[in-house]
Amino acid sequence: MSITKQYLKSRPVCKITFTVPATEANQVVVVGDFNEWNPEVTSLKKQKNGNFKGTFDLPKDNSYEFRYIIDGEYTNEEEADAFVWNDFGGAENAVLHV
Image (cartoon, rainbow, N blue to C red; front, side):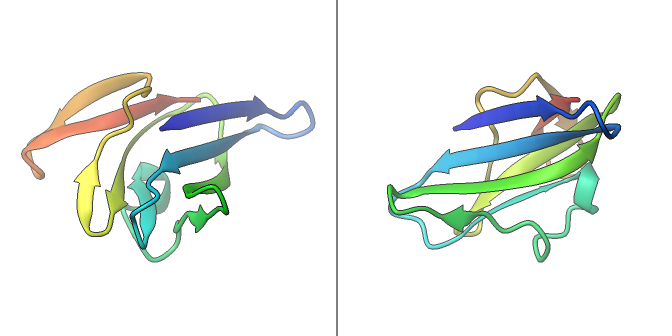
């Protein structure tokens, strides 16, 4: 799994690209603070190489908690900037600093 950050000079946003290698998966979604944890709006697209990938514009100078949902199973990004405990989910959330 990986995250790529591209800061834009022309706007106060950062293009975040999420890449998840999940060749056997049917669906990968990223949910977090930035989309109100709504899995309906941030599906990643399956690539020919089996990775799932998606790019989203996020306002910079913020931190966002997030997780992936791979075929219904929540998982964290191993390369996240940090991790925080989530009492509601009973697990850690990954954190992205933009």
